[in-house]
Length: 225
Image (tube, rainbow, N blue to C red; front, side):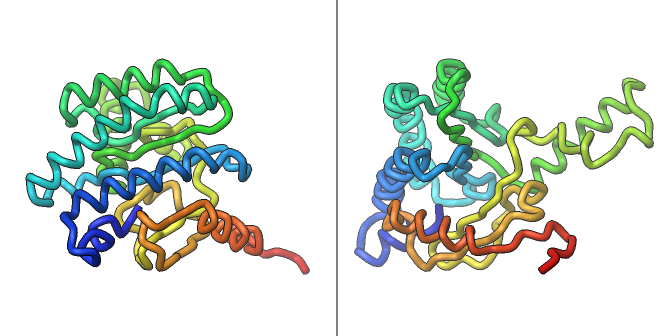
């Protein structure tokens, strides 16, 4: 969800206003995505690198995230949406952790859409944590060298039960992956739009999905004509 800060700066507004407008865009996309056949939607809400931003912006973001987590639950639950949170959640403010746990517990049985929000997430950190899990298992004598495989490694990822993304959408014209789902996007298709996230609407999501449908996915192999 890139472009919140730029959206605000272009209008001479505080950066936090851009994040608030971005939240409105998120609300619409989450509401409409299931009608477009989307079953899993992962959104990068706050990266582990975002802690480097000014304290005023961070505090505002934490309040915005906590408010959204609390206020969106009734509608999401009514719409049969399952909510997940991915990242080093234990490092977040205790009150926010409590709201997140409640959302996950209340919506655990929902099936229309799985909404996975990455908060305090970093792709490299996730890989380190997954590797640490294997080392700890080896130290306990539970596994040996031959047990370390792509499959066993992937089980240590934060949301190991979710499928890898088919499509990665980058808003604001960003041409990098920004330390995001580094393991999971190995074969994801990438779609880049110049649209800033606060201006991203369902029509832009439809454009991305139509473009994705025109792709031929090879997964390293050869597609016969």
